Image (cartoon, rainbow, N blue to C red; front, side, top):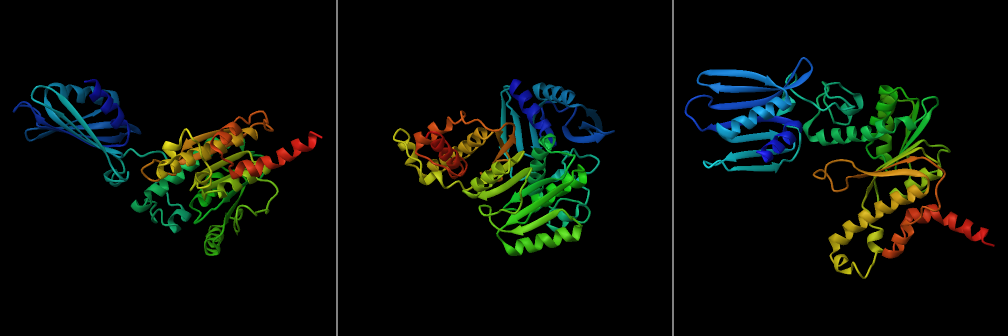
Length: 393
């Protein structure tokens, strides 16, 4: 029964919607069992409803108790279990000889039957909370007037919260004693820009100034109007590109969400030049190195276009992270959102720790091995190379 226990441990925890146990081996006793999560006095429990003739018997169990209960029922009394969670549907079948088969199938979306329940509903504790109306989320079509998340925008709601969780992790790096400046390059419709302002200023009490930058004039006009409507005095939207932006002398945090190809490199270079304390970047469309890389040993792999493209994307972000480390940043590459929503799901998070380490440039051997020269390396290291040449005379 080890596989059954592993199955239950995984899916009871991960957003269980309901579970049904059926197919009794005996004509007497319990005919069917239904299980669902409930909140009782602020604690998550699992309500078990047993159908016994015309009666319904109810019991409430903790997770460990429920797993033991289900294991016992499937070992000797029932032949079938059906499970539905936010991420998967599963079936457990037991043959007449006692052989158990477990089948699990992933499902699209994560917002289904549990949305209808309020008291008997286990919800993830998002930083932007469901059920509490937020003006910018209403105007941007993410929630309705009652604070309910609209189904087509549920993935966007989760994405916003996930990004805010990354920001929450680096709050100790931001100075509470002065105004901090956040720059959002390529802000687009500015879901995230508004979310950051709401979270940092209204929920966490930081004195924050946020600048959103985008090329589209109509988008900037719309977002500026919304900022005025909400009275967000320190939220500003400007039209312009990343490469040429010179509008501020000091930035504490730089954010880029899906800045395309080398636009990410220009944003990272700007952040380093400003000596930003925190960089949060979700790269997109890493085409540059795909046109550059070559290697005789890996040519059998590179001959397949899709594999070369994916390898180039991984190499691009790996080199970006190492280049940032050479500039004195502690750098991580983290999963941003589930792969089922987008293949571009990696986030580079960098926190400034030192003045940089010119000795930590082993990534250049990797560049030479693949005949690659990423834009970020050129932007950040061209000056260093010129300085080194001058010092050699």
